[in-house]
Image (cartoon, rainbow, N blue to C red; front, side, top):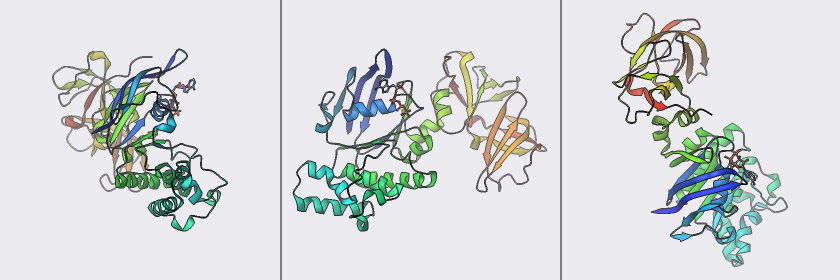
Length: 357
Ligand code: ATP
């Protein structure tokens, strides 16, 4: 069942479009991430869903009801912002109980719900501690417990993890995702971190300049991006300008031709085509191997070996490729070494070039 639908939602600030005609359906119980670079309109879109910003035009429906102009405090949505906005003079339990107090929930029911939530976030022993004496990750969990205390129908998270260091951030991503799945609460999260979105989301909405560039499951977007912008924003990629001959082959910079899988969507103009191949799809072979189809001669110019994975930059004269492999798969790789980079045709995707500015 679709829970939340947006139709042609637009927000202008003076003459500038922060969000431009967004259509979107968010299914029940899913976690959807709004992902995109700074200024693409993610927060403005979330704030309109929250009721903190009024659309210039378009409509927002939730559970079959038009809520476009419904005040934020009547929407029954839980929210967590980047700043968390916990009350510093209150304890953990008082913070979590706050929304219940606002709703005049009976004292004993409040106490039961707070105890249940503190169990859920694994902080039952910290109920009476002032929130100022918690670590970043603990504060994060309290903010989430407070946001879900009154069993909101929708949870809205705006970059909730951005203040945390990398390791804690990754741990919290898993924690929030597991919690969201356990509760089955429909959740929308804003992030500019593609890895975070890939880790947590059922669906990613990639935004570019106020518009939706692509919506889909994380791996579908990673494997089949619709444009150079999306390909570049989601994960590492080798993106090369090519010319397509219309029959399963492209010419690379420098003129070498290689085979590609027949594209599902052939970009409209042959001069605006890019070839995308992800680093993990580039196979590094010894130069003494047979030259052969889609094997390009090159020289290793950089190696990033972090133990579990290895990334090699290969200069192929006219363009460079990044190959992701492991030290075990490619032992003995050294700087300056001549190699063959194999680009399997099925992994070569053709996409439309980014529009010129
Ligand atoms: P970030 O990741 O940096 O938070 P974002 O994708 O969330 O960016 P928004 O905050 O939604 O982007 O902003 C989208 C555009 O709207 C930006 O150009 C921003 O400057 C503009 N904007 C946002 N809020 C206002 C406002 N209250 N008044 C005028 N312009 C605004």
